[in-house]
Amino acid sequence: MLRILFSFLLLVAALPARCQDGFLRDFSTKWEQRATRTQAVQPRWSVPMFSPFPMLAQVFRTDFTRQPTEGGGGGTWNYGSGKGFNLIPFANTQVDIFVPGYIVHGDDAQDGFGDMTLLGKYRFFAGNEQHGNYIVSGALAWNIPTGSYKNGAASSSLTPTLLTGKGFGRFTLMSSLGGSLPTSHVATTGRTIHWNSVAQYRVGRYFFPEVELNSNTYLGGPRDGKTQIYLSPGIIVGRLPIRSVEKSRLGITLGAGFQTAITSYHASNHIFQSSVRFVF
Image 1 (cartoon, rainbow, N blue to C red):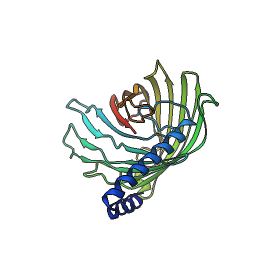
Image 2: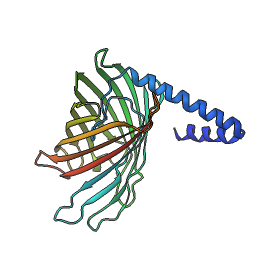
Image 3: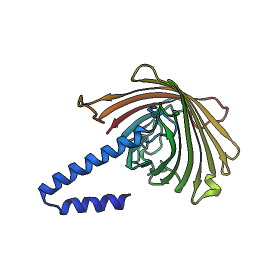
Image 4: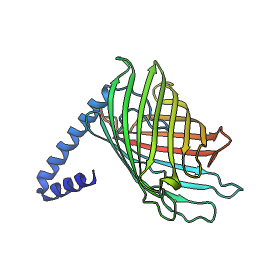
């Protein structure tokens, strides 16, 4: 993906100024039309706060996460939370570029950037609200250990995930099942099974209250056999249009959620997360 982007920039730089303007305008128009056609055949659900989602989305997203520090203190903040671009470059396809978030600790740990993630998603089946109100997709994420000062993973990992969803009028159920497979240091890090479920309800045009169950089960490593589950209520507001131009894709979506551990084992608890998403 980065190589393609670099080649595209070189091509644009080599064009005359007048050609550049026309080329970029034509490229942007075709990209927007392709994304609109692709999204028109899927349900218009809102992207959840914490869980992976089966829909194809095109946004720039940044989240802000606060985790309390045990024993008091200011807590740990993650600015960005490893989010970034969700893009629809082809029909039925989403490509994500998640930039590292910046982690500020409330204790003596060293602050620094987290990991980078690249993700590809393909939508296998879908029907909008008039044609079944369902969706089935598959995704593969590649986590790149770019974290500084132990603020990221010890090794890269691949995470294949199956994502599904079914709507019943204004009520929606989404679920995803996947596993993180480290490419090295398996004995010390282990593998993780991720299972997420979302119940979401649409209120009016812009409000999507939801509740999620986020589960991680660890196989191997120091947490072998342990499971942690979070109950995560939240609300998403949007898409709020930025321009009044008819059929404009530009908009903004806001969200907030809170995670509470409901299992005796948990690595963290009482996590607050807010989200800002620029739709384009």
